[in-house]
Image 1 (cartoon, helix red, strand yellow):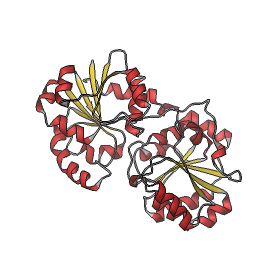
Image 2 (tube, helix red, strand yellow):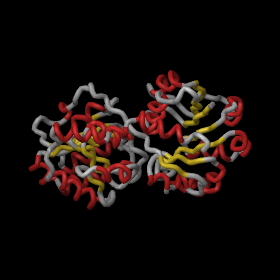
Image 3 (tube, one colour):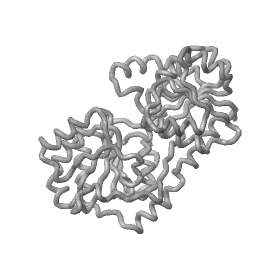
Image 4 (spheres, one colour):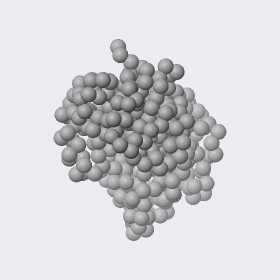
Length: 349
């Protein structure tokens, strides 16, 4: 089966990382061509090139895809989905699969307004939608679809990674990690204001939040930490890639987002035996229901985040016995297992 996967770029986002990892476990019967319509600005370009046939068309996207004569076309971005499904000939000649990577169509309000109105019209032309979470399945990227299936992205964890406890202050008793891009969707300014509310409890319990990443809000976050006078319990570190050592060192991974895809860090934490505290986004409701030690918050508002932080202040660190038990329990969330399910859903029943 010849499969063409269309993606808008190869940065370090969750969709790109998930694609690069999954391709390693593609069945031998699948011949994959990856068509990138934007910049390939990270090392993932090299990974994807090594696991597929790589294309960056200079002319017509539709013409480039038709020239490859695919049996199946997979779209990973709402804008590209609309471009592809607007060409009825592609849907007629090949099965079109749309991967819904998020519960919203765009972080940009104006783009989201437009996409939310176009997608329900176009989605019905796709053969199947694969949503990376139950929330994504009920969200804007799947609206109007005729066949929606949920397939978790899964994650990976390097058992031999260097454990990065050194990134937290040495006196920290409970290490909390927030890992990802510093963008509005991640809800980090609101998290910092919630930290201010819970500051005394966090300090007394020896809890310290480490924000690991980069992005457009980094300067705002650093200024807010200074202005709120909470540097004792929260600090910012640059992007760490891979983040296995950070996640494995943390007692809790905190996901404060207002919307999410996976996120991949959710799976990476569970595979590392790290607890998770998450707002009700992405696949959190799909997987944390199986975890008595992790917590899904009521919402992403300041009060919900404050209540979660107060709960963290009353939790003990993760012991090695618990960590080993958790790693065993969630081993089926590894990317190999999830990739097998993904490729099964590409077959005609």
